[in-house]
Image 1 (cartoon, helix red, strand yellow):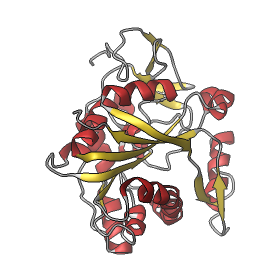
Image 2 (tube, one colour):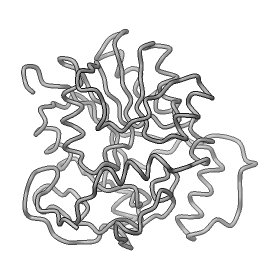
Image 3 (cartoon, one colour):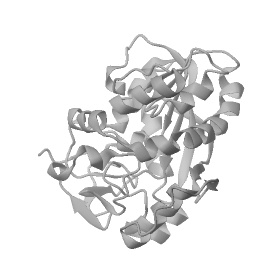
Image 4 (cartoon, one colour):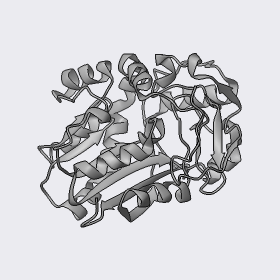
Length: 300
């Protein structure tokens, strides 16, 4: 195993071995189930190091992206698909005005990590050329069957380098990747001049994270990196972006799913199945940030 020598965000060598979660696991313990969207192994993650200079938490050992892509590609998550339309509508509503303000009424838009295809489906009403990348086979099949949306069943690493978009969207994707730096470099390359990137990721310095500490529900096996404002800003500055907006991101979740999540977080098991419950709950614990970044003009 290759020990991490430099911080992914700021390139510092001041990496302190420290556990961000309550329990650490090795790469060999990861399975496809570990990468489910609805994975509820809260407080469990890979062994981590903490950057003294920028505050980024990251895997102590380098992870091969091919292993992660394999796990994501074969993972099945029916619970996520059942709630994906509610999630997708909420995500779409939070970005639509941003897109209209910064790229206008027309233009190619790409979502990376498109999941069930719900967001792309909603986007097509305003942006008919909207596209999505999704490495999971089950999710791509669902998008086609449910919405008639054809997602590209590839990881972002295989995105055509000559593709150009006015906007790239990634909801809760960057923390799952083996190299967020490479991810931002690829986004920069495929954006048109003055194009924008809308990126959502959990905030390790949020009040909720500080209160829940090692049991924070964003600490889970599929999350490899844990950003705060400082570490993420160091990353996007290195890759020639400027920030034009930052806001809190909220979730809309089915009530039944939320109750099951709370049981798992508190008791580590589900006592009551609540699938018969209807209704949707808007959740904002102020522990996820949405960053709107613009590609700097005349810079690579």
